[in-house]
Structure formats: structure tokens, C-alpha cells
Length: 75
Image (cartoon, rainbow, N blue to C red):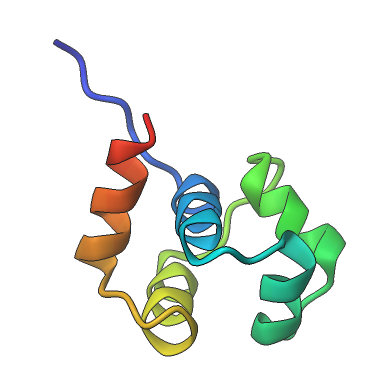
């Protein structure tokens, strides 16, 4: 069975929903525009992996491993 590759925007979307946040709420916490954040989730652009890790740990209080597990469960 082929495994799907999870992109940063998908991981962030899954953990955002898991935490009950809207795109606008999370983008404000990160300090970026809602439009920029929305582009990450739709894969128009890709956040740096270090940014995904920082958002997960510093803002959402999840390890990247926990975030990955949440995203995989959403597939």
C-alpha cells in the first residue's frame, strides 16, 4: 500500500481543526495574513518545515510527532 505524503499545510489544517480554531484565529496567533495561511492549507504555497514545527510546538502545544499522528488519522 502506498502511503500518502503529508504536506505542511495539511498537517496544520488537521491540528487547527483538532484544536477548534478557524483559519483566521490561527493566522492571527502566527502573525500572518489569513490569505497567506489559507494558501498553505490549499497547497498553493508551502510553509517551511521549521515553521510548521514551531507553530505546532509554540502555538498549538503539540510535538511534530503528535501533529503528524493527527494528520494521518484524518486521511
